Image 1 (cartoon, rainbow, N blue to C red):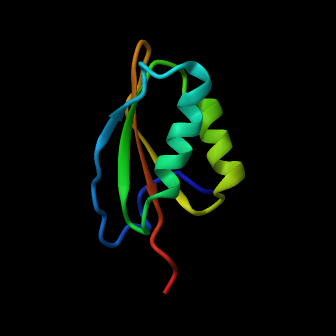
Image 2 (cartoon, rainbow, N blue to C red):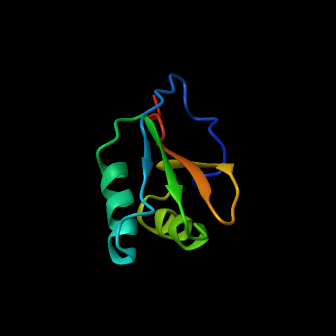
Image 3 (cartoon, rainbow, N blue to C red):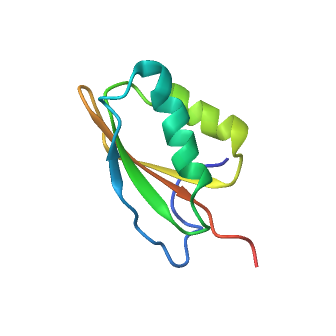
Length: 91
């Protein structure tokens, strides 16, 4: 199942941490999806959230099956820190 552990990262490139708490609620998910779209295989970014990310994770599972890695670094509430990455391509 996509997004469980970071086992498919051979050369993990840590990216920036983005705090989306100040964005309007309707823009948060779109902004996070857009950040993911810009990743190359093996790259990650972290995001600070002020909402339970379970629905967002389900969206990633639907739109990017087997293409992403999801690691909860800091479980909320009131804040969650999630690392999201694009898996390395199969060689």
